Image (cartoon, rainbow, N blue to C red; front, side, top):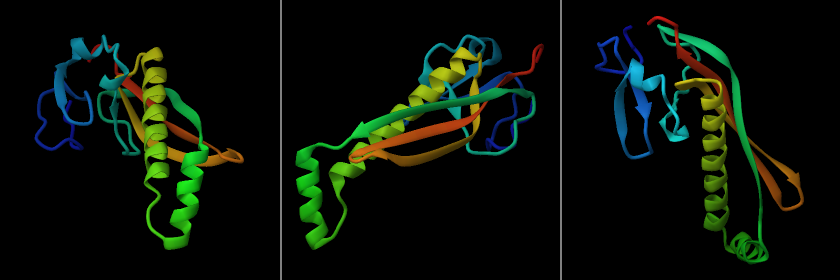
Amino acid sequence: MALPWVPGWKSSASLLIQASKDSVLTKTDSEVAMVSDPKNIALISIEAVPDGMRPLGLVRGSTARSRNIARDITAGLKNLVGGEVTSYTKLMADAREEAIYRMQEDAIRMGATMVVGVRFASSMVSQGVSEMVAWGTAVGPIDGQ
């Protein structure tokens, strides 16, 4: 299976796995079949299912986070002078990572090795509470490949 979306990959017995933000591992197809750590589910934003893979279904993850009074006071002061509200930026980044992890857990329950078409959305659920949602299509190797 050629993986044209991964530069330099030629072997049909290998699959790109995102082990963490900082490191990438290669695993053989038999090792991939036993993915048990959600962080080992590769996340790809491409729209098409790669050759040799089959779609397994929609996977999703979400989390709702609330602000706290200290962040609100800091944000209010920041509004006066302008600039980035770093406490909110961190809050949303943490929420995004949690939503991704939960989506990867959902993919493992389906037997997937990868999630394609990954998307994110956020919304305000109620005053001071925001939800972050991640979703995509779980895919796994075609049987016998």
